[in-house]
Length: 224
Image 1: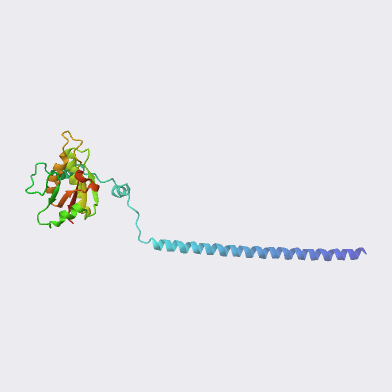
Image 2 (image 1 turned 90 degrees about the vertical axis):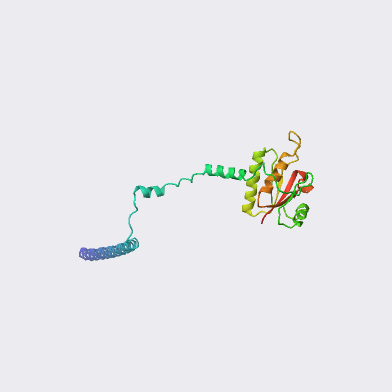
């Protein structure tokens, strides 16, 4: 009986050793396979990186480093604003003011009484009747109330110059009725008459209709 047990134990031990050997072999094969896969993945990654490096080098082939001299640095600095030509602007405004004279005496005029009325020579007489009826739409207007003569003269000159640039045809200039002046006389009204006649772009002017200011304003027609 004892001999049979010994034989059984020896067979069992042999089978166990064989099983352990197969397990070790399987683990070894699995480890080798995993290692091979890892090596292959590493090689693929390396090849990809090498390809990207080659492509990058090809893309930047011939490129040169940015210069770092003083001139190049200045380009990167914020550009300084252009200087404002204050003197030029002052001269331009003075030239506009000087283009109108308070001493100008018109050679002829069509005014009757206190009504402002003027038509430049060479233009059809019906322009005045149309202007007085409001035929043209008023596109711009200024008000001279509260201004002294020199201020009003410059304001009118700048206004007419701006209208000329913008292609405006019909404008209104409110000069007031002189009720607030020392002698209760419309000083700016008479000065405005002479200023307008001096401007070549003025074709005609007429006293405004009642709804547009009446005797306290004038409607001016400018060249197209």
